[in-house]
Length: 222
Image (cartoon, rainbow, N blue to C red; front, side):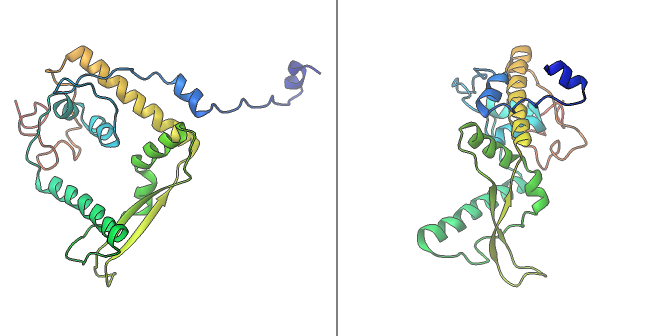
């Protein structure tokens, strides 16, 4: 019986095998060269933070990476960076000295499972491992929970999350799309014209969370 006769008889042909990571990477059109940085050096890669910055506001990305603008951080930005430093220090103390920091030395807010399952960062790192043929089954967020009404003492915990192959493919497609948009914006508007602004109703486009809000045409600038 031929394949046509089998299909006509109501039997489906075997589904095509899913592409391997290498095959998928070959299909995705990724620019080989990104625009030069403010110091003339080429941008070699897109980190998780770089991807997020462009996705939230292309103009903020242009100012930060192309023009090299740096501004004093707001209180919220400063706090976020200190929290990251505190977590790093806490686990370094444990791994290197076997010591735990006191409550006064480090504090932060626990990450929920829902947020971990929807965060883009795990998808980026797991997709990288997947492409290298060294897949990881999960990604773990190390965090510290400070004392409060429901917690008597400080504790450390891991929130683990995983991603399906489909989600890994989606993450790679998103990164490739941002890379293409960066190149297109540079070619169309150059390094000195705005590339596009964040949603004015969103949290990013505000004096509290944007370093350039005061001088940006899409923020308070004119």
